[in-house]
Image (cartoon, rainbow, N blue to C red; front, side, top):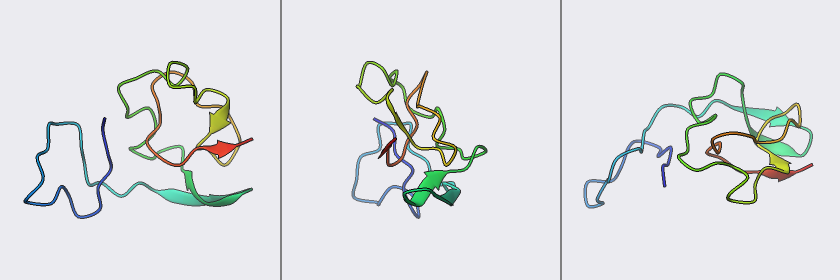
Length: 79
């Protein structure tokens, strides 16, 4: 798993790679405040395919486009 961690991985935690602390660039969307902007570093930042995880019918984007390809790191809203 990869995570976008505010202020980085805590010193006592073991980071096995793939985590980052860049601003996720959240934007408001039709059902909440935590959609990912198109230029977000969290878009396609996961290692697994969205379909394998069963997340290809929901979205992290304010335009309600489904999560396809590599999984986006973020809250997935039901369309």
